[in-house]
Image (cartoon, rainbow over all chains, first blue to last red; front, side, top):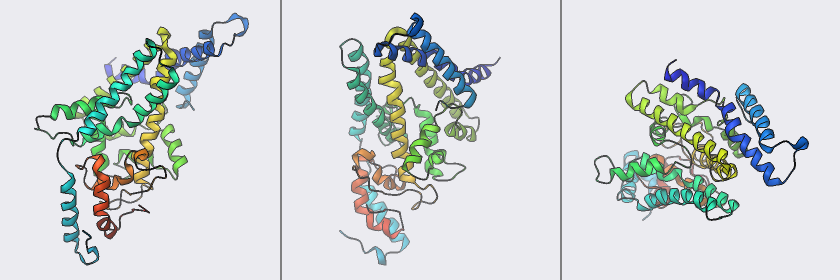
Length: 66
Length: 290
């Protein structure tokens, strides 16, 4: 695999990576800030990861976040 | 002194225009240097001020949004070598301002300079103007278009413009620079977010970058070239009056002067415009009610 191919794959998957590594902790931080307790004693980052990953996959497939 | 433009030939109009332009060209535009470097320092200082000194995040967000919104213009002067030409002792300063001032916007200088020269050479050409992708029917459509153009699946008009330039050392260097900038931006956002500073990363960089990009594309690209239909020296850019004033339009009310004489620094475009307004009118330029 050349560097070019690796980089292309990296940017191709960037929405998913971004969803996990940025959207997830940002959502978790907003949940903490709001003071809302999640059901079933779930941690904010768990919901953040679920939403961030899901949104990232949608962004990768559709090519748009909004 | 008013000119009798009605009785002037093309050559006389061109000479009069050049004579006016020449008066506004020259010297180091120190204001743009201070603006570029100072604005970056203020934006950088927000991070420790919020994290260590308790500056409220909402204040940092407002300041950061302004920082990102105004960071492009000093780099733009450098792209045109208006701070110092090649061979000038201060050429390093031109390149420094051009390179670092757009860090908050995450736009690499080399890419900006190369694609911006294409924009000037082919303004409003659907095939060869990288900024043609900002064409939109009205102001609301322009804002929406700029957001759509930043989605993962959007056309990378600057990437296409670079590809069209061929596989040259300059294009390779610009491409590598763009990749490094983008990956570094992501890496910094990710590192802050997973270190307990997700809101700081969001409100000092990510959201201001989105707002600043939208503002910059609106005023620096869409507004002065709308409706993106005419080509030619006196037709491809317009003067316009912005209801909230020239400063809030980033000086773009007079962008027509920049396209005619890119060597005139931003803050002298207004004075040059008013002096050459009759000539521009005689040339059939779109000057609206300005």
